[in-house]
Image 1 (cartoon, rainbow, N blue to C red):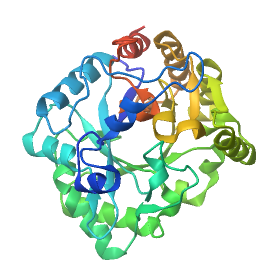
Image 2 (cartoon, rainbow, N blue to C red):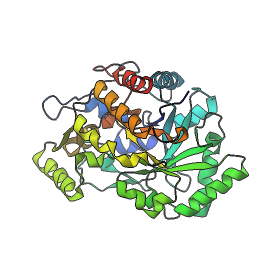
Image 3 (spheres, rainbow, N blue to C red):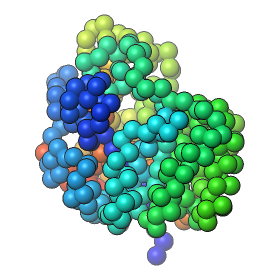
Length: 362
C-alpha cells in the first residue's frame, strides 16, 4: 500500500529538571514553568494551555514516554525526532530522556535525532526576561576534529538502535543551523566514514531551512535534503518590519505579531515543496508568548479542523514525489511553551491527533 507521507514529529526533551536550569531559573524549572504561568495577552487569546491526558508530565518516567508513543501511533506519526543538544567538548543538556529510551529499549517506537546547534540566551526561555537581553547562558562551540568524533561516539548507542529511523536506507539526522557549523563538509564526511567503520548504513543529513532562498546556499546544498519551516514568512517576509514590530510590541506592552492561523499556513503551501530533496513542515499552531511575552509571534484561532485541512493541502502538494521522498516534518509533538504541540489539552482533547489521522487516511 502506498503511503501518503512519513510524518516525523519534532520532540522537545525539556520536561525534567536539570542542574543548569535550577541555577538559571530556580529549583525545579522545566518547560511547564512557562506554560503554567502564561496569561492571555488580548481578547480570546488561548492561554494558558493546560495538558489533559498526560498532565504536567516528567520525562524521567517511562510510563509517560510509553503513553506519548501510543498517542503518536494513534495520530499516524512515523517517528519522533528528538532535539539533541551537543555544545562541544562533550557538553550535553537534556539528554536523559533519550538515553533512557535507548538503555531500556522502550517505547518500541521509531526515533531519530536533530542537532539543536545553537547557543542559549536568557531571553530564549523566559517571558519575564527583557527580550532585548543578550545574556549568554551556554555557548555552542565547534572545537574541531576530535569533537566531531566524540560527538559521533556519544550518540553511537542511539545510531545502533534497531528503532532508529531510516530515510532512503540511511540514518536520518537533522542539522538545525548548518551555516553556523564552520567545518560542515568535514563533519558530514567524517560522520559518513565513522558510520561505515561501525557497520552503520550511513547518514541522510537534512538541514532545517526557514526561507526558500536557503536552498541556494552552499551549506544547505552539502546536505541530502532540506526541511523548510516557513514560520517567519507567515508573519511577513520583510525582516526589518518584523524587527520593528517586535520593538514596538515591547514598548507598547502588547503583542503586534498576531496572524490568523488559516492565513499564516498559506506560506507553507509553496510549490518548492515538490522538489524531491525538499521536505515540508506541518504546523498545528504557533504561540511563543509563554517564553517571549508581548514580543511573541502568535498564530491565533487554530483549530483541529483547520490543521486537518492544512495537512491535506501539504499531502496533496507532495503526492507526485516518489514514495520514499514523501517526508513531512511535524513541528511539533510537544513544544507547549510555543503553543506548538499535538498532545491533548483541556480545550481540544485529542482533536489534533484525530485531525492528523483523518488527513493521512482519507
